[in-house]
Amino acid sequence: MYDYVSLLKNIVDNTPLPIAVLIGPELKIELANPAMISVWGKGNEVIGKNYFDVIPESPRHEIMTQALEVLNTGIPFYAKDKLIDLIVDGKITHHYFNYSFTPLYGKDGKIYGLLKNGTDITDMHNIKQKIQSADERLRIAVESSGMGTYEINLITKETVTSGNFNELWSVDDASDTEMLLKKMHPEDLPVREKAHQDALITGKIVYEARIINDNQSEKWVKVNGKIIKDQNGNASSIIGIIQDISDQRQFEKELQEKIKENTKELRKSNENLIHFANMVTHDLKEPVRKIKTFNGLLKKEIESERIENIKKYSDKVDQSAQRMQTLIEGTLAYSTLNKSIQPVQKINLDEIVENIKIDLELIIQEKNAILITSELPEIEGAPILIHQLFYNLIHNALKFSKADEPPRVVITSNILDKNGTKHVQIIIKDNGIGLDDIYADRIFNAFERLHSKDDYEGTGLGLALCRKITERHYGTINAAGKENDGAEFTVTLPLIQEKKII
Image (cartoon, rainbow, N blue to C red):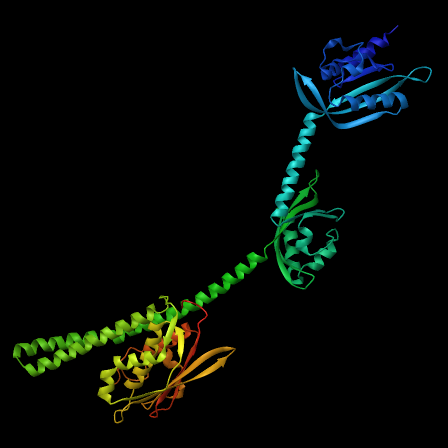
């Protein structure tokens, strides 16, 4: 006859899962396989002992309660992922177990004992904890970065989101794909569609789109995704992230506008360089040629000792050198005007005009000029620039005078209110040769000349400087007049500057 008892014991002993049979009210250990004996850590002499004497210290009371409850009620008990302290090599170590108590019934139908088994899942528990910890860190990182995540089941069309996805897409529920599409700007729907079509080839989804908020404002988002395939190679889902790029888009827009503005300034600067090149090849070339010519004549006259001609040619050389110096200084002043930062100060315009009268004292005396000035207000600005502005305007009025009539320059002013800001309007009117109204704006261009340089000295930069100075002071300058009937320049400047430097 086959020994089934020995067979059963052999199976139990060789099972890797801890198994024990507990008999009677004291739960005496009738049977325990090596795996269970190892878990208890009390040696091989546990057979025949009371179960409550060998169970782990923690949680002893809880386990006793669970075992006795099954013994009394016959209802099996199962525990999952339970922390139990075991003594291993004399040290208490933390383990996690799935274990159970199952009632054992005799022929009379009464419970005579319990079957105790368990599985050490410590490694599995630790891996699970690491995964949960990594998921939590990822969730926190995604939320703190302002991004949102999404997963689309391509079979069921179900959408699952996390993080800030709903807020970024301006929806309460992201499970409805149709609702998500309704929130997207209509012009960007083809962009999304193309991105999804390309993803069938590349496996990646990348596109940018505008989301329409409830208040009808727009925000830019960037969507990144990856297609996940099943074991058969068929696309099964899409996993990705969404992030708000509105600030980035705004920065790009401002950068483009800045580039456009700088390009315009560069184009303007290039035009000035062209004018400058023209001036170098013509205006500067001529005085150099004259210097060489008169210097040659001067040498010949020196040999002949003709004092009168020597003096005449020497004056010509001096005049040509002075002309070239004037051109160079004017060009330098014009080219560096935008680069020098000037502090804003209180400026007494009456003092500015008086100082200019002193500077121009010789030409005023030579031409018997008359300057009539009304009381001017105090303004804010860069004194050196304001002085240059009015010096150029008054000097022009004296320079472009009629040959048979002394210059008469009248300076008047009045206060204006422009958009709630007080401005002073200063009018400088003369009785000189005047100008045609069709040239009223052109004369403010760099190197522009309406009269022959042989008749009137200058560089063609003076009025261009005047416009630059008024613009830097957030003001305006205009010209008007008639030929042979004088010119009138109107300068409008704010009384107070908003910035401390210009």
